[in-house]
Figure 1: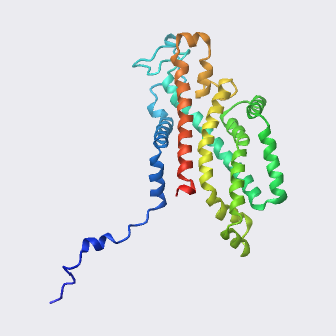
Figure 2: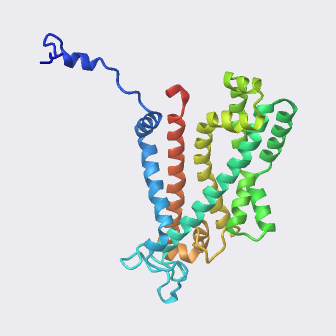
Figure 3: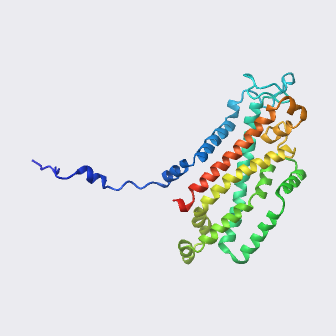
Length: 303
């Protein structure tokens, strides 16, 4: 008969409590820290709802955003038209949903292009240093010295405004801050042991930059991208408000504001400009909340 290994003199509960807890993963640590920032969590939730509403606009929108009904123009909010109608009788709620698709597309598309340009220039400048760094940073200074809004107006005026051209214009005018941030990170990383070791064994600079150094600079890039999306959405709204952005009848939050700037519309239908203005304000504000939350969460000093 086998003997039992159980010893009644040993406190097994106390012994089990001495077993070290399983290490917390980086994902769990990120979620835990991010969830502490209530404004960031609120911003992320609202942005998720806005993005899903824009993506599912064909399923959610009760009306065709381009369908006009002059007999029902500037109708107040009701059960039939939740946010009322514009001066052509088009449903404002439906146009807000489809307009969100355009505004978010311009924001995400422009920031993606700006990140590609800024990351490449900043990485090359910070890795090689010397005369290359000096020349590239002076080029960045020249771009920054040009008033962005006037440059945007000039380019858009020369070329016919469209969504793809707006994305291109914002991408080539919004990359400078990204380049400076990446350069600063690379100037710090280039003296680290893993970079020096890679150079010693003859690893090509392209592989060192994009495989070893860039992943270590991804935190500041995520924060920059989040904040930049809000800035681009606001700039697109400003251009559309001036009539230089997305052209009607394609809806965007900016050209909906531009369409409502008529004094008669403002006096008889104040809800018309209120809804697209609130969407722009809420979206940009939530992107800033999320950006601030990510900055605090990804701060190495807080890890």
